[in-house]
Image (cartoon, rainbow, N blue to C red; front, side):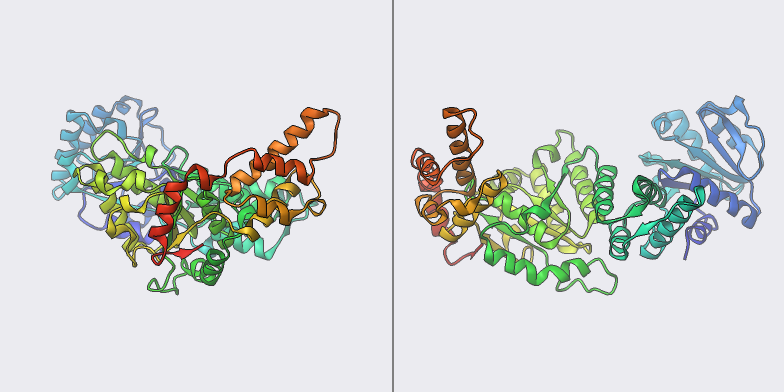
Length: 498
């Protein structure tokens, strides 16, 4: 079935007002132009700048009917049946006069079929008109259609200059078509065109750029942010149990957006428990990097709004963005600050947010994998952390000696230092109780110390200088001793070590 067929069925119904929320105005006008000939109906289009005109013929517009009230009075008084497309009429829906005129036109639809079609990026239907209206949505392109668009844009680029050669990797094209799922056809075509024009090819780098552009298109100012370069965290030091768990479920997550994949055994998500500074944020990025999918971060501070109903709408928009970006990881950072059981007892927005989130977690069909991080799981409502909502709870403890050794190697090499010239075993033993961030800071401090002593020195610090920085500060295990012991005691037997 196509948009043309679906729209024809809607127009053959007895619904007097049709609501279309879309930015693809030219495509909608094209559909109605084709349907006008098929249904033998007159189709009129109205804009505030041009007034009323016939859509299926190149006729001049009537500037005298540019005012919203004027065009509605004209439609009400005319004895000519037809379809009237009102483009960007949404700012005028709050006027009582306009609402009353539209209601009278709709109520007289059976005697004289004059159908109102409102086309805009967003429509808030007045309560008086809801029982007279129905919504219609354009279909989003599927994988086959997206592959066709890629082929068409490549041919268009080559035809513009016949001497050009187009290059494309099959894997990159397949990945691009997968990543473009969820955007409109016009937006998909524009993103494909931009990728091709840049270098006359579709490569792995184009796929990453298009994914970023897709997110910015979907949620420029929303409560979710796009975390870049998560692939760099896929081989993060330590976290062997967590990475092995993720690896076993990678294929299932990536296949969960395919129509043939059932939802019963799809991976749902995990909770990462640990004290502040223990590396939960890095672990969340490592999960996305291990899966090889985008990472979206939900900010509860932006989510909540003082106006009734706005917080729930913000959550719906955020979850809808995550579903369109699927397969992806949705990171709920420090979730207890937004959904603590003490806050949800007030019966206000927190409880409504919790209810909406739990319903979505239970019913979602898209491949959105949740990674929730928490410093204090005791503050969370039990219905959120029970099995079935999430697959597992992992405890992110401070790194052991092997992980600390690898962390030193990573941070030394990242700063252009030869890790093999350091006694990594000695450094790993001396840094017992340090977090990954603490180890990094010891390396950075040693570099500063060396350069302060001799500004012209191009080399790096020695093992002894890094050891001096380690011994000159207190590890996280000392600074947060009580909190770490309480968490370790609770996590023992209840969670899986990450």
